[in-house]
Length: 150
Image (cartoon, rainbow, N blue to C red; front, side, top):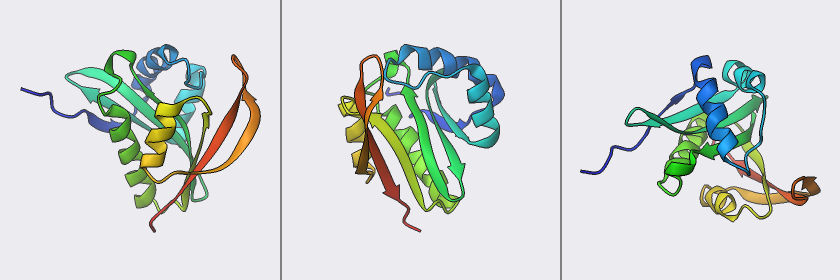
């Protein structure tokens, strides 16, 4: 029998240690100290995916005056390619629309093609670039935006 899809819920401060563990597994993720995630849990939007009692991934965003900026979308290595990032993105977009966000912004490494395909699937469009934005390796950031349906 197939597993039920993961449950998506708002993160609590108790989730920060697991968020850090999963974030460290993902080379392409933004790496922040616990205090930054704690701040996002308190003032931003952090959603986590859980399935069969296991933490599967998370998405976090800042919401400022009607614009949301996605900071990180990370799925635990052992659960990649199972649709979890899709479900997290869908839940985040739904929340943004419920809260009347005018648009959602993000930036991604140029070489991160799986992430770029995911964002484009959800109607994010390339709106610019930041040359040599990333280090280790040096790489451009591709800027994406998605207008809300509201």
